[in-house]
Amino acid sequence: QLQLVESGGGLVQPGGSLRLSCAASGFTLDYYAVGWFRQAPGKEREGVSCISGSGGSTNFADSVKGRFTITRDLAKNTVYLQMISLKPDDTAIYYCAARPKAFRSCVIDRNEYEYWGQGTQVTVSS
View 1 (cartoon, helix red, strand yellow):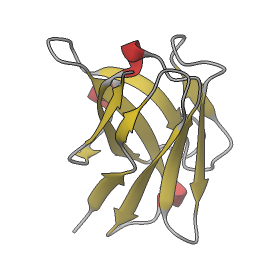
View 2: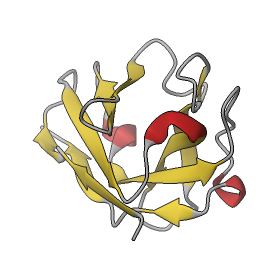
View 3: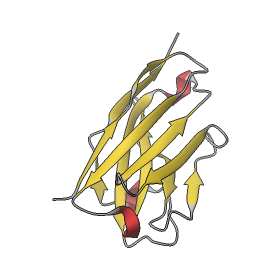
View 4: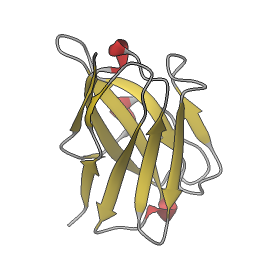
């Protein structure tokens, strides 16, 4: 059974850092794009970043460019979202999602992703 489990969320002060993890089971990352999305209270779920199945292509939302980095560890079958210079506007539940047959490229469009994790809360506040 294909499963995604996020971890690493928490409370952090503005300007701080967090690293989120998305552990995949039931499939290998090689031919799946993995995306990170977030949803703040009262707002729609928005795309944050993604990495292609090859690992050679990534994308970022304009709001996080230069602050967030996406990487993966195939040996651990895990994708990471490193977040620095966090702002209160980054507060949200963060979800990872997987899209099959997305080897060469990825898009951060939630409608393109088939499998979803349960989310992890990130709160940026002093």
